[in-house]
Image (cartoon, rainbow, N blue to C red; front, side, top):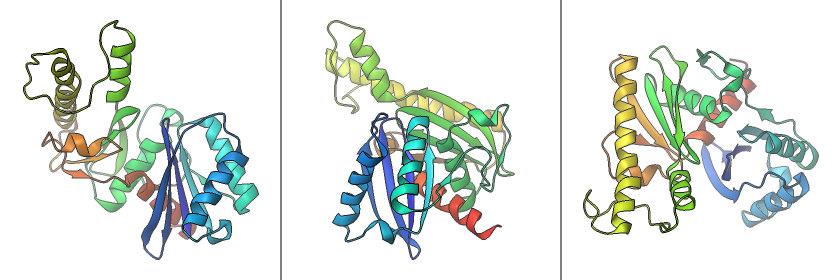
Length: 258
């Protein structure tokens, strides 16, 4: 049984893959200073709830954008599961080429998502990952990761707006009745939500023009992807488990030696 661990800046997503399918997954809050033993207790409780144990896991793949927690989960897996995990970075065999200036600076999640798209959906493609940051990652028709763009996530944008203004407060991230907000709440929803959708559409259109390739797929992932997908036709497909799938694909590639 494979355990895939996706360590993000806000949440940690864990999934168990067995016999050709994901059998369960969990999310926990990212706490950078939490010790391996503390995360081990959470993992043990998750597994117990699924009638599983540490011994049920035979392989682990880790993708992390939080260096401190990369070490934490590596130690956890080594000590409690007695397994040497596959920790994905720019040197890992992924099935794709990294055609960017400084591969060592590429976030593991971006590499993993690109690998998942090439293996499962084909290229060329644009991956829109809606998390703490919103990233647009470009995969060429030849299956190379070519870079992309990084923007603040919509929650980060709202937090910045609220923290820097005296009379504005958080609002629900839903579209207002009209783009012209006739009260403060609707005006904020217009600027934040509708403005963010416009950014997504504009970035996708500009990236497509720059790629200059036919039949470019636009794939959305991340916790907020569904709400944006409902309000734009710029996204072709929503794959919530894309990063976990990428970790699985990369793990299997490194086991087979292909």
